Length: 168
View 1 (cartoon, one colour):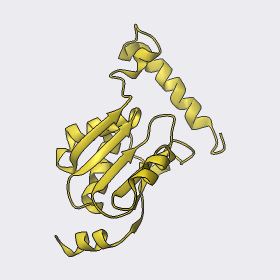
View 2 (cartoon, rainbow, N blue to C red):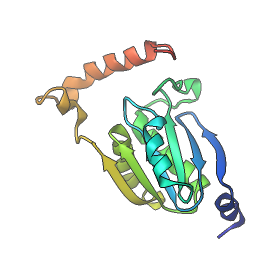
View 3 (cartoon, rainbow, N blue to C red):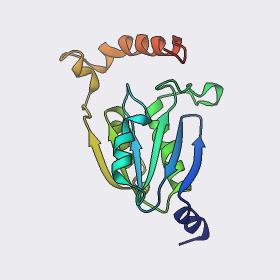
View 4 (tube, helix red, strand yellow):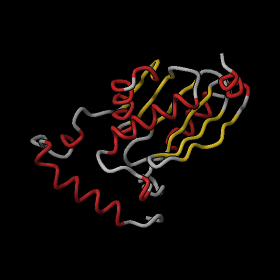
């Protein structure tokens, strides 16, 4: 174990990671666990789980930008699909902030992000748990949905989210 890893192991709480795609913080010590929230949620989704796990697990909670009032990252945010970029950024965070492959749990969209992370960056994921992850989310809206048929709906939803202020 290197000195940086030993230092992180001994510290109870780490300062927040604040990047263009998400904010992350870690608390506790012991094996690392990354928790990813869903589409209509925030990192607070995991509050009760964090309390039940106790201080002997080092819990990393992530708040994705553009969700639950956290601004979308502005000019620092790269253009292109959000989830693949977020998976790469999460892998960079985990490589910098943990001692090796970690357990990852994701709910809904966070589960999809966790699956992408495990598929594309397998060196950072040791164990994986996903909860309530539909294979193609748009099928919940219409059983006849296709990526092409829902693209206008997705664009309209994105505009509505971006037009809202932090209080909304």
